[in-house]
Length: 159
Ligand code: 5CA
Image (cartoon, rainbow, N blue to C red; front, top):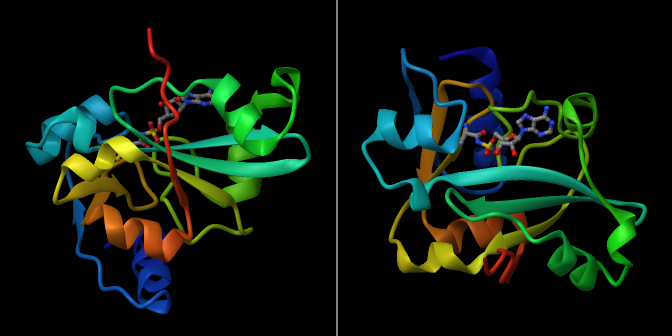
């Protein structure tokens, strides 16, 4: 296993769960790529999106096809819409320790306040990145909520 994926597996173990990391030859960089490699629906893919909300770094775990509504993130954080911005590639690496396309939902360099898309609860199992753009692991929505301490919310745009 790639050492970066191993770091994610170790972080999972420290949080009290065992994850089986799957590494692919093909890229799993985007939600669509990951779904294709795994053979699951795009909605079962966890996008790990970093935002700066006010002065707080926030991780939004969003179901593949959903678009995050920054207005909802602002409301949840109790800040104005103008105080929400998406982390750029450099910021994401600084805050999480991982590069975009491989950002896992936990095991980051710094603790991130986490929100989880309620849409995941229609599935028994969902898949998230394991640190690299070709590694993923499966987890139940309940386990993901438990290990991240994330708040289950409605995050998506309604367009
Ligand atoms: N490995 C897959 C899922 S298992 C994955 O990491 N998907 S992701 O959605 O969490 O990561 C890709 C996301 O990074 C894209 O949805 C996109 O929102 C974001 N992204 C891509 N390029 C940039 C960029 N230059 N700056 C900020 N965010 C970006």
